[in-house]
Length: 315
Image (cartoon, rainbow, N blue to C red; front, side):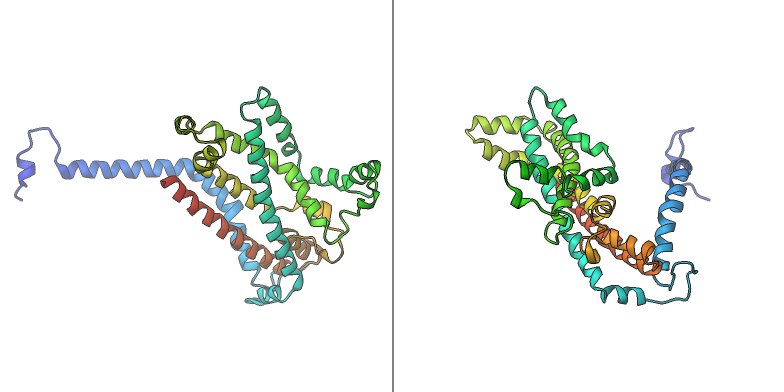
């Protein structure tokens, strides 16, 4: 076989281009299998405890699975048709939308306001600890505490009566127009500390040169915030929005503790409605269908926010 020009022109002892390429491919394969070996425990854990339950849930939603029975016969899309004809599903969906909008708008807005107020203060760390403290409690504990805060003889009504506003005292968790806002305020009380800390970290990481240059040019505080601080803080705000939206979609403990006794389940979100249909009513396949719909909505929103995050990172 005739040697190539590249091979004949190489000094003795130096490998050819093809030999170096083959060596690099072998090294790449070794690196791949080594990395896969290190990732195998995590991949196995995710596969068993995340992906497998998701696949099983999707399959269960296509059967007639019910309490004290097996998966039963294949039912196709019957559970999804029942879901779309159930008024409780649309009520829960509407409540979930309210929760999601309030969960990302109110914590982000109030958290940003608190972060701007706290930033640079002498007791900044103390304020951060105080506002973050409610986040240390579980949602169940917070729900129990605020359930009694809103009780007929609770703190809210007692304070209103004490200042002569007895007419404003309400059955906060048993009135159709008050129960959901009362629970959202409770959620805000627990969530705002986290959003404030995240936004405060983002504010402290901002470059100072553009801000100082704008001040030298005579820009007002509002102009600096609107045209410099806010655009630079956009990636952090998007992270806060993502965390808050997912928290709103998956809120269960708080809503269950505070709103499960409301008539006709009209305060329950999709997550709580799914639990109710599955474990209270015993329609496990129907509950699985609700879980699939809820997961698809949450996944779509997370994917959209992820694309938006990538676009902001490329700017």
